Image (cartoon, rainbow, N blue to C red; front, top):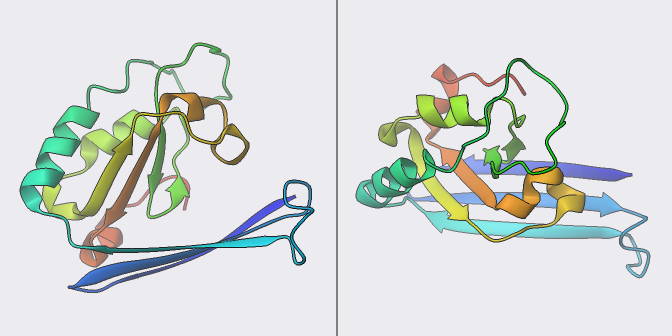
Length: 145
């Protein structure tokens, strides 16, 4: 069983994220079967955010009709995390499209394959991680919340 606890704190100067994983099947060699990941970053430059967001919008070629489970084995869309919450693959493109540069605190796109055990089938297509500005969180609502 995989459990994940995430704590995010965003201020004007930095973002701190603490993610704690607990998985007894995958980490039997660890005494408490837990891993903690700490991320610290500064506010990203608006030019960099704009450039990355523009490039990212071309990375979602798959089209979905409705909210469904995966039926495409050859999916090309990357996994999307917004404030460390995974966006359902059928909604990822729409969520990326509605974001504005001013809403984003930090954005990162890793085109390389990531862990499918953690992120699912689309992990082979890379990972998009986006953290929103604190004020943007209030007016942007995602289906996963």
